[in-house]
Image (cartoon, rainbow over all chains, first blue to last red; front, side, top):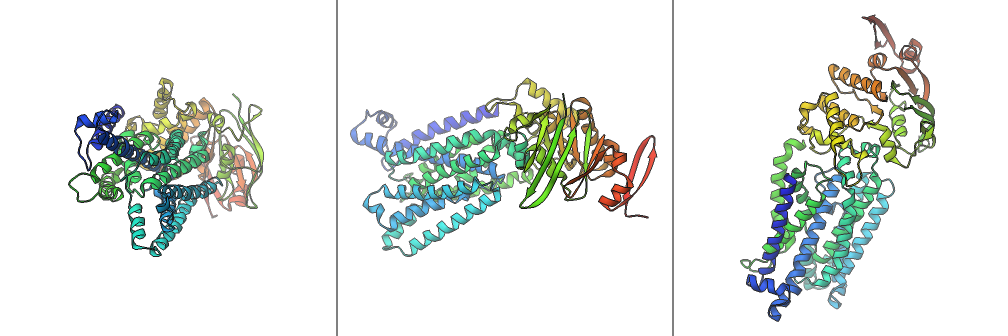
Length: 329
Length: 257
């Protein structure tokens, strides 16, 4: 019952936020123009604003948020740790390093797609390392430590690149990119990231039942006939693909993957397996909302979305922790 | 319905022999106790039978046919496992946890049907957990939680139950309660193999005991034979006092008087 209402509310939120997200921006449009432009029936400029700027941006925000939400939910279930964040795998840090390297060597100014492509390449490398480790009967602890190692190495190299930045401008470019933004993203970015994000989501979805059983521990889960190792590989690869691709086109966006499962889980009996799909939806909605907030006209300049998600996410997270610590113990 | 045959199981981890060529069986209707000092290989034997570890050689057979070590799902229909300490990692409701026991019987997208609800209720009834149905498991006491996890095992309707120290950390009343539940399960439907350290409970509840030491099967037979003074002093390095009351036998281990 609760489940039905929850989905209904999410759906209403998604649709209304999507329309707001299309309507508001640097140029405010009327509702009529917004909807007409979606079908290419408004003035040429308005058409371009909606179809080539705001719509890809909306799509990207939803996709990246969904990827972060479902990855966070799956990782928290797999690691049986409510503090797990998609960043724990180190793939986002590796993607970040790829992007920074693209800026450092100037590839990014030679042709714009170099940045996301390099980021995806580095994220992919980190994913391969992780999957290699995960497939060798590694324990969950080994995975966390491997992710930590990848994060540290990528973080150190990122700092190195920044400190040796050839010009202050390129350093600024690196920092701004790392902070996360959906500004000026086009359909090309969507085409680049969407396959990886969707692949990741569809790899994670079938693990739902195993995640439920994993609440009883790996041995008991195995004794109940589920394949824990396969689930681990699917989730590591799926989360890495969707999170890495998200970082590649939008930079680092923190806290969504950590907070969303905590908001969703209580509505689904605290079962991590049953909260995968709603976490994906909720993650997408939150990022659409965050992206709406960063470009509302009251701000002098556009805020970085990664900053907004952390600023809003951290207090929400604290609140949830205080509220649920009784039952978590 | 036939029992489980465990044939020639050997298992070693990086050169150390954990189980050395163990053969035993679990007949329908009986409670078999696995006893032995710490590190004897009791838990490893249970895990080997369940297919949780890669054994080096050996077989688990049911009805003359070998249970595949690959198809864990088929195995889960025959054997259910009550893990040691049995953790629960999320604040799930009791009903939901017991319902997880039905998962081996469901297809990937299938939800619980009326058969499943019946099995869940029966398991809750047998373990005296009906009144806890809507409670959150992390708010329960240790004894209640142990019973709920036992209910999860019963709900799976697997004929054989392998339980690893199910009564450790329970108060005396709950120890007896859990042993009664296991005994009844064996009587009704299947067999129970249970790792235990309490020799007194082993003597009173088990139909047969299997004595392990250092990965070897030392002896198996009825409790009064296995818990002989000779075995107790050779394997456990203890002595014991024994007496009978109302036709029940009791044993209390001590260092020697």
